[in-house]
Length: 433
Image (cartoon, rainbow, N blue to C red; front, top):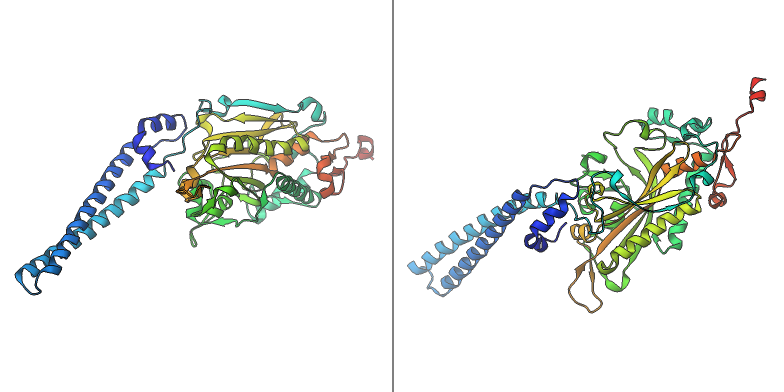
């Protein structure tokens, strides 16, 4: 949420900044409602003053006298006027808040202009796809034993498309990745939390999923709860409506959760196999930081996520996402994309973002300065470290061996318990017999 004082004093600047993003806002209605609500509040305060004055004068008039009865009538009329104005102000305020929540965060000045991912800026790359990807690379869904290890058909039978079963060694490899991600996060100073998988509308509104992404979340109308699209939502809301002492900043948390996304409107070859699922596993990093350090914290957050890809020996690149392609609550966003050798394309496996004070203001998260002054709104950040399905896809595609098995990255073997995964493909002569 934008600071209302800043909004009133810098409307044209805000309009120009929002125009760089992909969102539209009904500016005229927001301004008109704000003017109306402020006028009603002022009228209500004047009516309260008149009510108080009548009450004082009535107290000094002899009871039962015409003067006393006149003041009683005057006070009752003023009281009714106050209630009516407060009711009107509350109604207008509710309408204003609904519209004001549609104003996205402003892109930072360092975010490049552009409307599509193609206009984002590559800022870093690591690894050589030629050296780090085997010549046997194929799309992961074409690996002969893949269909038995990641069972989409039975997932469709049990739930629906996009909800696969991971079976046997593949389930253990997924668990190895989760353990690796969490241990690396702990080594980088993040405290682990195990978060709820359902959140209420207030939590989804605080982090900016509502009112922007209603159609992308699974909703239980009976209890008015949402399945989380990312651990960012419950973990960020851990401190909702709280004041944190400045000396505790930066606060860093990590959490593993399944994530649930409807992915409405997604289709085509780019969503095959593990590329896009409705349920997937992810480890999320969340930070609550002092405003003066938040953009430095974003750089270190990106490094924390990128380090995992290097240890997994996966070629990747970091993109600074252009203004027209960053999310609703984002001020600045980096995406990490891993090279999937079988598909010969880049797959996004992490978004690392600074939300400045946008989420914290909606969530009421503040910090108390060391000098004991007035509580101030802090900044929040989060990043995926990492999303599992596409990382898994890249591991499978980039490490296919001549016999059809897949080499497991060395960093995972202490959890996985072996060097290779998969069933060797019999040589042609053996297959003919």
